[in-house]
Amino acid sequence: MFGHIEARLKAQGNLPSPPAVAQRIIRLANDPGVQLGAVADTLAKDPGLAAKVLRIANSPLYARRRRSSNLRQALTVLGLNAATTLALSFSLAPMFQKASPKGLDLRRCWRRSLLGAVASRTLGELAGLERTEDLFLAGLLQDIAMLAIDRMSPDFYVGLEAAGHADYCRHEIERLGADHARIGGWLLGQWRLPEHLCRAVAASHGGAAVAESAADDRFERCVALGGEVADLFAGGDGADTVADLAPTVLDALGLDAVRFGDAIATIVRLLPEVEQLFETRVQDPVAVQSLLDQARELLVVRNLETLTRVAELEAVTGELEARTEALELQSRRDALTGVCSRGHFDVVLEVEFASAVAGRWPLALIMLDLDHFKRINDGHGHPAGDAVLRATAKLLGQCARDTDLVARYGGEEFVLLLPRTDLVAAAAVCGRILKALREQVHEVAHQVIRVSASLGAAALDGRHRFRDAEQLVRAADRALYSAKNGGRDRFVCHDVDLGVVEVGSFHVGGSS
Image 1 (spheres, helix red, strand yellow):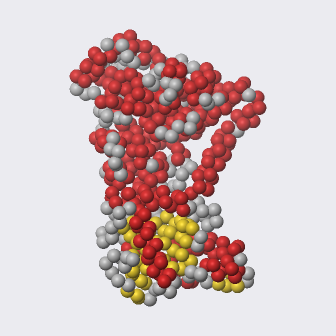
Image 2 (spheres, rainbow, N blue to C red):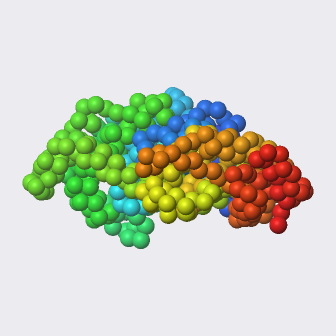
Image 3 (cartoon, rainbow, N blue to C red):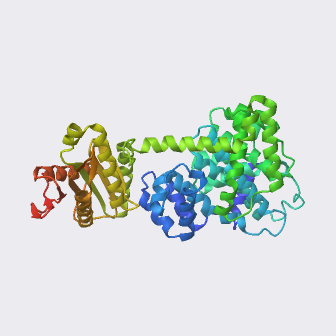
């Protein structure tokens, strides 16, 4: 019988289809070799969509990550897959916002879809799943086929305006032989969305049955339970209470009463931001307060020892997020100087190099080594050397732009990664750094000392090409070596075409 419905839907001339920008994003998502630059170019053509991606990168949904000041930074922070998936979510939203003349309340449908998206993502994060943006998209699209059914038969939902969501599904099964979730999975397949999204949407209205049957796929269970949680928030649908749903969440995802209470509080905290991102009203203040009260009661009943924790649920959640942010920051920052760590630099370098190659824009790298640093440690002690390293890191940060990255490469070596910067501009930065270092004084044990540095620069630009990021690093390192051999307190720029030309402290070095 479902095959008959497929045939009717295919014959339907005005079946829901993704907007043009969404179709372009789907094509990018299906390309295993897609580069960050291609995604950036696609989003940049739609200023509204680009602004939303930038905003979500800086929203509470990603508050633990570094702030982004432009689209390219946002894509780097979010990651290629996550950025593509979130952009697709934004581009599909207008499909739910066209008026339906008869039985289907699109506003109500859209509200449940957004609630399901946030709930699916939140449950997935608490359960330790990685593809949380995919969960958001699957939750958002779990009711997409209701639009298709409404267009195929405009009076199909007449008389169900006040019915609960489960009543909609029963009505569909009785008349069509399948509910809109199963039809939605088929529809997303027609759109060429990934198979795991199609499966999750098709099974999304199985509720507890999915929790038991999808033993090997917690992704599907999160989407199905996200819909159940959405019904709790929707209110007036005859949905279960938090206490009724808690055992299913425990069995399906291993989240106990405390963690499920955390999920409810997190969803409440995120809803205002989601409303602004998608420019719609989702919250029902009465239903939200009722759910918070139910969550607190559940925690008290299950474990009296958690009573204090329940009363301060939001404070505890904020503390956990702060700890997570601190741990991530610690892994990305050098403990002594506060600039980026070597490991984080290596990761960002690969991303920026690939982006520069794909976008055909320049990328410069400066390597810096403090001259005769061992004399400071030997003559004044390691605490004095540490103070000089911290002061140097601060100075480099002042010489860099917000879009640049400063990292400690090891010992007394630092690196600066300069996106969209050619070799000539990198040389100017080297000059500013040398001047600032010469003017900087360090007070050590009541003595004033000065520290110079040797710098080497290389750039991927119109005249200088490199096979990969490692080759760019080696070129900058060779230039640094030339600066040190040339007498220190100077910089050398790697250039394959020019010999050594000396002009004061400016040097241009050929490849070795």
